Image 1 (cartoon, rainbow, N blue to C red):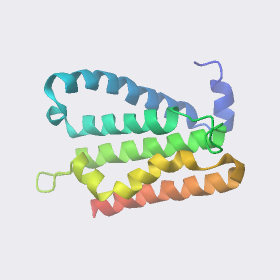
Image 2: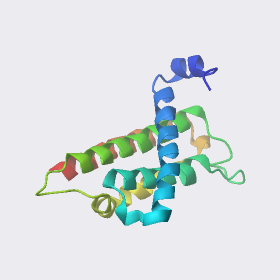
Image 3: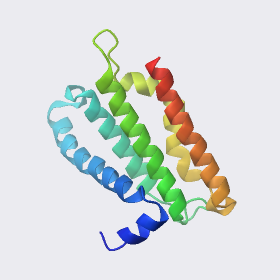
Image 4: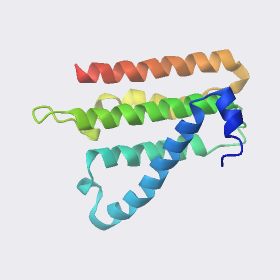
Amino acid sequence: MKVLDTYYETYDPEFVALRAKAREILQNEDELTEIVQLVGKDSLAESDKITLEVAKIIKDDFLQQNGFTKYDRFCPFYKTVWMLRNMILFFNLAQKAVEGGNDDRKLTYSGIRTQMSDLIYKISCMKFQDPNNGEAGVVTHMKALHEEIQDSFRKLDD
């Protein structure tokens, strides 16, 4: 695992931490799935529901590839980093939002999902960015989505 960390650090210093966080989310999801099978999803804490949903996005929209499509045949490192960066940003901000609510205005993942369904869809659709459009085009799109995620959570706090 650590053999390429030096390369990753020179290309993008955030990547190793993003990869570790994604692995942590997937490991937590395994444990939570057992709980859900025993007592149901409603018994989970809101932060655990976020973990399950983001793990689903990571598995379905990040790890799963279709080699027969132009956009998914290969995934350059810059696209990989930006996809992870946006998914982990959403995860962190969603966790912060449900943990930071007060008793008068308790925020749930269901509320986040309802208010941000378009944004969650855009996060799931990041994989459709075609690397043939060039690094500048893909990164510009990913940065715009990064800002949109931050803006959406800022508005949610207001």
